Length: 470
Image 1 (cartoon, rainbow, N blue to C red):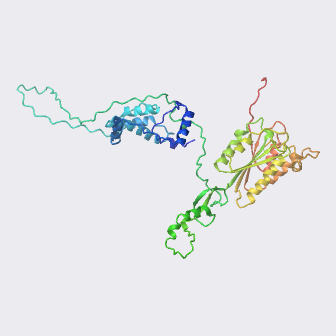
Image 2: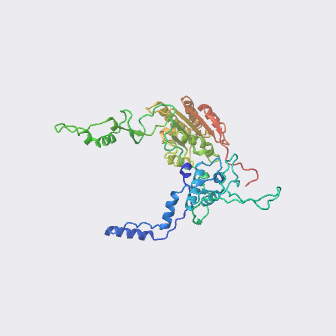
Image 3: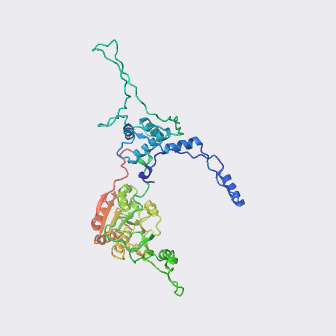
């Protein structure tokens, strides 16, 4: 649930195991008793051996050299395109820390391999050759040779003379033996965030960009305060508390006869920080009586993703749900975001006894009219998604009065088509009908989409049973 670029800052990640070694309840009771008697003792600092302390102090002052072979070896462990570049730096920092503790003058390939084993990395490629056009390392200077005396028996001109030269070696500090790190468990995947599902909201702390209005309306819910830029929507309590801090200084030059007034400065003013009003809306008319034989969740997912990305408000109209308060009426649920838990719960509702499709479309029509045309914070664009087979068996009048008045006949279907025609006349509404492809009356979804002026997409069935299968 944490962004991967934050995890890549850690140079060392080990798989920890929490083991319970003491009775925690007993410790808490003893702590309460000690506090009641005033016998709380401060924890004593953990003693650090002098040898380890001196070694750590010297390692911080030591700056070893990083060889080109070590750099090439680091790239062999983390040379994937989808990996963040901080992982290269993390491996290099861990390798350099080992070199400092060891007291060596330069970081080599073996130090990188030790650090990689600590993290649990495996080399991607075994090539450790230096990159081309590498600057050759300087050859150490040799000691000047003394002039040898002429030999009494000179060698013939064709003989080869072998000359041995002594080389001055710099004094190196004596390095301490390295202690191998024994891990209790191996790391199967050192970077689990690469394959884990994303369970966080992208840019959750960033307000959405405004597509239709250049300025946000000051009518959203209050989420904080900020320095005021205008004199509108002033946070009075925060402003007065800010001004109260500086009153002794501002009244310093006032005389005793003057009344102590609250002196305000332009820097004292704070305004409310409000969540932006949704500029777009997703309206979903869901007929629960036609969803049992089709894969409707997969076809609905793109529209839910759109509502999530655009921070759109959501209106869910349930038609024919099992737990409806009145089976002759549809129900409407409003939410400021698709992340509201109730929306996800109501999408999985069971099918009911009747299909008041006309009443569901009428609720959608009234909601769209109010959202697009009424109020100061109007919605600028709405997406209407209807999932229905078009077989409404409850007339609109019966849904309004709450009882069936026979004869019914095909009034439910006719009322649904009439309401769909009014939806087509609305501006700034994009209508989509997802067709569950019913086996009976397969032309009704096509008529409904035509009257509504909606694009129609077929929902594939869950599965096809072949002949001969039980």
